[in-house]
Image 1: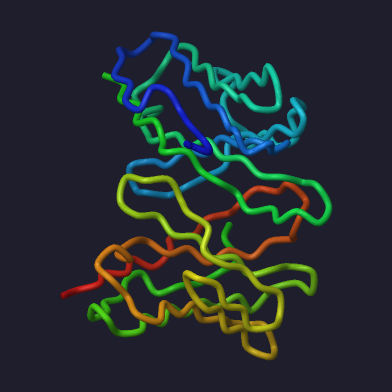
Image 2: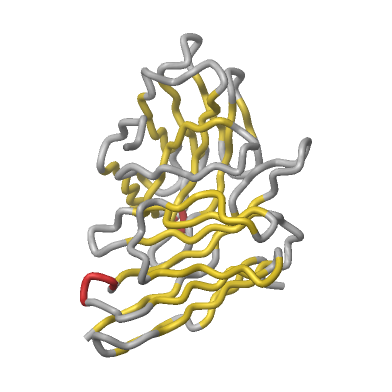
Length: 115
Length: 111
């Protein structure tokens, strides 16, 4: 069974469009994250949600809007896509419960290409 | 910015031990050392973590120096499937915090 899943795996779109990437985890975790990996392979945190509450927002343009309908899902909506948004986006999850290892588990990534 | 320094690349012969160093001279007393790896085109994968004692699991061993300013990840019998970028990260544990990835070490295991 897949622990952290993302859809779609690949997304090719035109500049100016609006798109969403979905993430789901079946690990029972209470914290979820979005990371961006650019063309130079640097992985950087974008957002983190704990129990549906935003706890990390790393100065990401407000064209990016995460939404957490429940603890198991964290979706990423991007408005007015730009060429520089082309990257691989990784979702991850972990637990903040005391006594539980806080290992982050990553999804397979969504490769976004903006033309 | 990442608080760790790693060599950008290393080679290892298949079947031999791979020793990946990491410097973290500014580590705080409550920060743990974590290791993750990223195999090409996949999401990062947790390997191991430790505070000050050496740790071992089914994937690797982690050796942390007594002053905690550096550590070494050891893959005892590297296989071709261990070819990946290995990231050393220091962070406080169990606070739901972000992982700050540096450039990592690109390990190539060769036959």
